[in-house]
Length: 333
Length: 279
Ligand SMILES: Nc1ncnc2c1ncn2[C@@H]1O[C@H](COP(=O)(O)OP(=O)(O)OP(=O)(O)O)[C@@H](O)[C@H]1O
Ligand SMILES: [Mg+2]
Figure 1 (cartoon, rainbow over the protein chains, first blue to last red):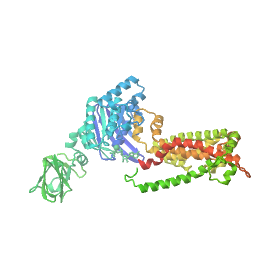
Figure 2 (spheres, rainbow over the protein chains, first blue to last red):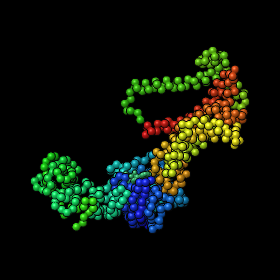
Figure 3 (cartoon, rainbow over the protein chains, first blue to last red):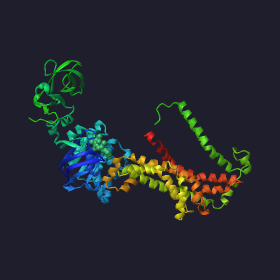
Figure 4 (tube, rainbow over the protein chains, first blue to last red):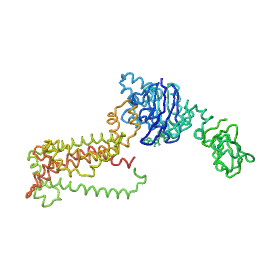
């Protein structure tokens, strides 16, 4: 069991309001990812759920019970931090067992829980070491193990992978996804990496400046964004935003993903010059300077050659385009 | 840390400067120790000479030890220094933890207030302190000295330790809170071990002025039973005749305990002083 509800939650530091009224329901067993630009309040929101930060107003509920004033240790949550935050003076085994020891669990039970978590994460050979004798990836696995041992209602992750190198990040991401399947626990995961968000989440919450911009399943958010912010934030490379004027549309802005812009050397609707080409192996990204719009990105699969400064023509696939009004809100047909 | 390019000339020059400084700094100590083993005549005849079989004389040490209460003076100094050090570190660390860890109204003002003592010498308040001690009947007790030295050491301790504690990872403390550690456990088991180098730095800077102080023992606790070693040595310095053998021997002996304490802290101290630079 472990469903989380946030009702009109706000947070102020002194006079500045950082979280401006968040409503959210996370169901039991769901993997929920908070994404948003730096400083939008993801960590603050997570720390409020953990009880590390007071809630200025509103309710935080776990399983329907209001926990605003409950100490972090009483909330039956576990948290994994970006900086691992392992206790430097304890061995891996003691690091993982500490929470249960504090809760006064019998020794045999602690040992069993620790062994089980160690087995899940392949930590067996490391159990007697101290954190300083581990690599970054191993430390983060221990930190995840420490969270598992407590069998919490809610797992909280604050950018757990951002200190790891690219290969390790992919491996650990897959590990976290596997753990979520095996444990079936509710997880809340903060990241600014949209690949992590798209691949891990059952539900993505896009935040901007302390407000929720959109909540939904990854593909729903990708295919049906509510506004230009969400459309631009989810998807890489970023969506192109064209002025609608030249196309004779009633909307203000036309959003088109880079793969839905067709490039041609002879005919099309928008004239431009090739500014830069990036060949990524499987795909080619071409950046094109145009007179009416900003720099546009075209994504093609396979390898393509477009000489820099060549004049090209672009045609948006109108059936895949998104329309937005002057405030950036989506206009649905 | 050091640059990869090890230029021999540069390292020679650096070592030369450091050795020169060491010699200058140790010279007075050397003179004291050497002369404490010489006869009175030899001290004045050639102060820089090493003791030879002719000039060697333990009379200074004999006088000091015969003076009877010297062990007591030692003990008093030791008690006062160690107890003050303990309280400075304990209260200093606790105040620093509160200042660096908790957001409360007046946090900044409190920090400034506690640090103010660094700039205002406590001796300015001697008369008031003496009045307080008389009123509370603490004159001629070691407690009076311990209280005063604790007050004297706290500002620097709070200032240095709170700066270091701000550097301890928030995530670590928060992980402890989620795992159910009490604030006291977080302070004692997680934070204190991580600021050990800073504690050693504070310990050394607190300990030496206390051990060497003559002012407060003279004013607050000059009785025979509460004399400290620095005050005790003064009996050999008279207005007309000074027993130099005894003074030098007493000073020589007084160096030993401080040296021992310093050696205990020094490994940590080096890390403390260079913490910012080397990280
Ligand atoms: N203790 C604090 N006092 C005052 N302001 C704070 C405090 N903690 C955070 N803030 C402010 O709250 C806002 C949100 O911070 P938060 O750490 O939640 O951002 P974030 O979304 O996690 O960003 P990032 O992706 O960079 O980690 C920031 O503007 C930050 O300056
Ligand atoms: Mg953050």
